[in-house]
Length: 274
Image 1 (tube, helix red, strand yellow):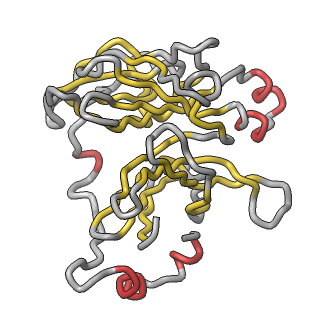
Image 2: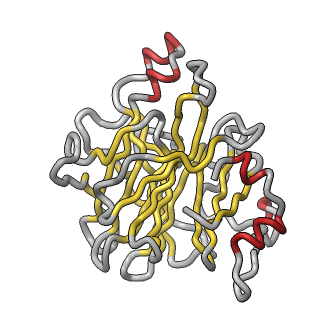
Image 3: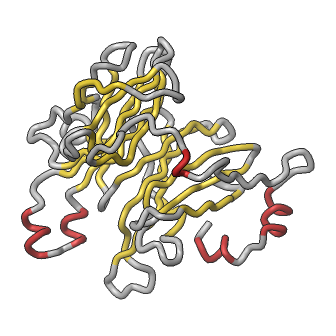
């Protein structure tokens, strides 16, 4: 569903279109201001962003994300905690273990493959930023991005290695797309496949040669090989780009949260199709 379709549909229309008699349209809202939320990782430290949360087989929570104590973007920070209501402790950083190593490791997403295995996807910028910084060629810079896959080596999720599978480019490249980042993945029981939503650049509508941000979606039955991409939505009005999409399936409705480059606000879109 494109932005203009959603914007032009009133709450009542969306409700009557999507809900059933026993499943009313629910609008989630924060229970308290963000400033009052408990900080479990990053107490006055340099830079933390684009994190994922996953629980290991022993019940320990793992928070993995961009930046960390030193603000480094060529690795992922890794912290653990017994619950989501207490500060986490840092583990050694996760490296890309590629040749060459990633210039940027961004926006990881972890999902359990089975009882013994967790997959960790991350946005990998290959090559150098020098050409982009010199020419300011956004499209050329964007084409250096790819989505890579790592796998847990131990049940406690404290060791990660690149996941190689037949047919994947350079071992563990799941796919390449302009500025691919911020994946969000879940299993859809109704459609019997995984859905992956992510941010990317696409040619702007109108054919003027420009670019625009979009949330794109792919499907898979095994979390390794993914379908061709479709555009789920373009950039919300006034957001400059589409960032950090998160999608939740609840009572037959798909809830998609998305923010933009200023990160100061987030919009929610609701649809009855993925």
